Length: 181
Image 1 (tube, one colour):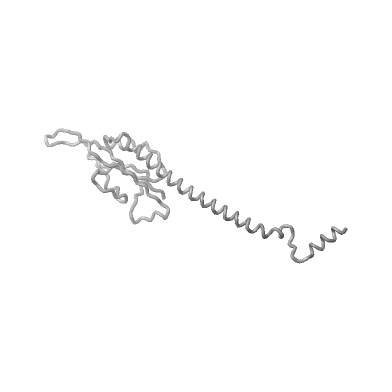
Image 2 (tube, one colour):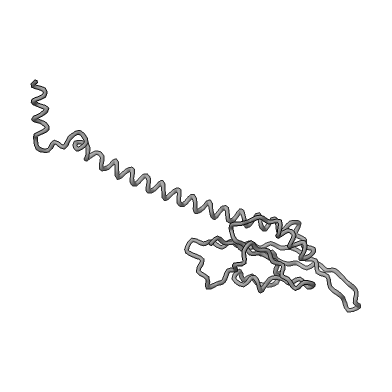
């Protein structure tokens, strides 16, 4: 009986908050520690995911470049288009093609720089989108544009002054520009 009486008196006394209330001062730092842990964990996962996407973009650009480069020799527009059509890349968006070796690269105006086929007047261009990069276009704060340039040789047919068909091989650049929207 004495035990029950002292226990009841303790419940009615001032300052007693109960079993959890007495531990409340020690729970506050624990809750803050958990909040700090999970926020830093989330931040780390977010940084990892961002780097993974950047890395995947770089890998996709290298794969597109390797496919289009092939042996480093482009014999015709149809050969280039056949290689382009064999690509199966959905993301990132990319635009690539052949430009003259001596020309400076402007990634925001590639369509006007691509070499045109003499017979069909079509450009040596390969892309998985109809969209083009323009300098004034807002791509967003976290958009990364990846650009790679590789040397190739292009076979060109021409007619000389005597009217004979001749073939020459000229050095060109393969430019691959990729981005995500």
